Each structure stands twice: as C-alpha cells, then as structure tokens.
Length: 374
Ligand code: GMT
Image 1 (cartoon, rainbow, N blue to C red):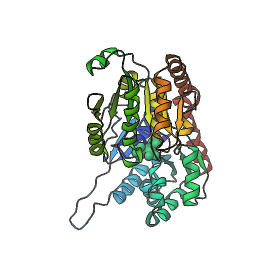
Image 2 (cartoon, rainbow, N blue to C red; image 1 turned 180 degrees about the horizontal axis):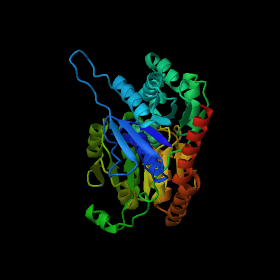
Image 3 (tube, rainbow, N blue to C red; image 1 turned 90 degrees about the vertical axis):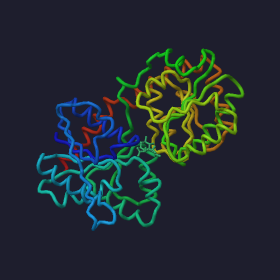
C-alpha cells in the first residue's frame, strides 16, 4: 500500500508512534509518505521506501497567524494525487483529521482517511466548547478511527458524542531498541552507588503529569532507603519542580537529565518507573520501561490501568495519593523477589499484549478493510 502519515513531528508519544509505525510498515514493503512540518524526530536515518514531504508554512504579512492547517491540507491533497496514496493516516483529530477531510475534498483520488486519537485533543481540547464541534466533525468524517486505549475511546464517545465506531489499537515499542541493556558503567557515571535504588520519571512536565507528586513520593522513598531519582524531560512545571527539590533538600539525590534520546539506557539502570498523571490516554513511557524490564507505579487515570496490571507488572494508586504511591513503590524497591517477578512479567506483557508485530498487523488490517469498504 501507499500510505501517507501526518503527525506532530517534534514532540511526544503520538509522533513516536506515528513514526515507528511508518518505519515498521516500510519494513513490510509498504511505501510511506510522511507529510509534516519537519522531519519526524524518530526518522533518524534513511529508509529506501520512506519519503518526507515538508509542509511549508507561509509567513505572508497579510496573515496575522501563519495558516499551518491550510498549508497542510493543500500539501496532503498534492501528495495524495501525485504519489497515488491509498490511505492517509493522521495522528490527532485536531487539526489533522480536519485537514485530511479538506484534502479529501480537494484531491482527485478516492483516498481513505484513518484518524488515530492520542488524548489531548479529546481530554483537553474536546472539553472546549469553541472546538468540540470541529473535533467531532473531524472524527465523524474519517473513514476509520482508532484510539490508543479503551478509556480514550469511551471518553471520546462520552465527551463528544461521536457516532463512528472507534477501534482500540494500543501503543507499541520497537522491542529491538527497548530492551534491557545491562549498563553498570552508566550508573557509575551518574555517581549512583551500588546499594542505591533508582526511580525514573519521564515526561514533558506539563500540569497533567503531576511531576510535583513524583518528587513528593520520592521524598518518602529516600527517607526509607538510599535512592536516586532520574527526572527525564523538560516543560512548564520544571521551575516548580526545581524549587521543590531544593526546599525538600533532595538536590544530591535527584538527577535532572533534561530531554534524552536513549531512554532504553536510562530504563536499564532503573528499578521503578513512576507515572502519576491526572490524565493519560495510554502512557507510552510505561511500555518503554516495561520492555526494558522495569516495574511501574501509576495512577488510575485514563488508560494507565490498561497498561499496568495490578500486582503483576506494577501497582496502581489514586491520583495524588502520595502515601499509597510511596508505600507501593517501597514494596517493589525493598523486595528483590517482587522486583524479579515484575521485571519478568513486564517484559512478558510487552510480548503478550503490546507486541509491535501484532499491533502493526492490526493497523495493516484496518487499512485494508477501510480501502475495501471505500
Ligand atoms: O503525554 C503527552 O503529553 C504527549 C502526548 C502526545 O501528544 O504525544 O501523548 C499522548 O499520546 C501518547 C501516544 O499515544 C500516549 O501514550 C500518551 O498517554 C498521551 N498523553 C496524554 O494523554 C496526556
């Protein structure tokens, strides 16, 4: 098949999923055309059957705001016709599904539009009355719609009243990259002592991630045992988190690593992953940690309970329940048996429930069924 893919190329799990999907589909012989405003950051080498079409955003002085959406729709229509695409798979309803709808009206081919919902456009934008009708329209006009968790699929129906069927297709990781690396030298480089437990949190430090809770929980862990916290990523809450680390007297035990690419190396030196968000449609970072054999403690928010299996691959707790999260974290960190059991279960769950082979096949089947239906 000839498949167009549009995503936000620079940040976040949605761009990662879109790009990894494109790469794995290309490995299966499909021709992939990324249509985006810059090269997706995970497209870090050349692939013979992957093409990139840049959306040029015009800066004419007549525009108060550069019209990204219109430029994208126009580029989509051009690429659909010129490259004879069969499918256009857009990640995020807002604005990508709407741009795809417009492109479909403009182009000369009968293109099938597949929209994947990743979260923020439903759980945050979908609640904004000035945008919700537009988002619902984009979803309902798609030929097929997927969501990354059952929770997100039902939230979409509840918040927006969409009428199209929404199929859940879970996130996945490339297991060749996300695997336990066994890198003790890295622990030493970071000055982590052999007897110290390592807790990791990776996010974009937006409010929804509740990163101050991560520091509060770590304070309780560190009071109970020698431990280090790796904070990976950057974002709006970082200033508050830095202050908190200082006032909690944790500066020697929290490593602020900023944005990092080689997460598998960092997960491989960690014993516990914390994801304490108040909204989270899936939590791709949990899966990345699990594939490297790291148990997690996460909140009962959105799709997190579909990823963490209670007392199997980690534990769940209520949003903001610092005492319970700390207690559950310590029960993992203080027992080698629990750690071993959960490490094995985490890797096994990735193979059993989130295998890239299986999930890429689900998308492939969806594309074929959508083309046939069209
Ligand atoms: O987590 C973020 O804030 C980034 C966001 C994105 O747009 O990439 O992630 C969303 O999509 C990921 C891939 O499907 C999911 O794993 C994340 O859970 C989801 N984030 C939220 O729902 C907050």
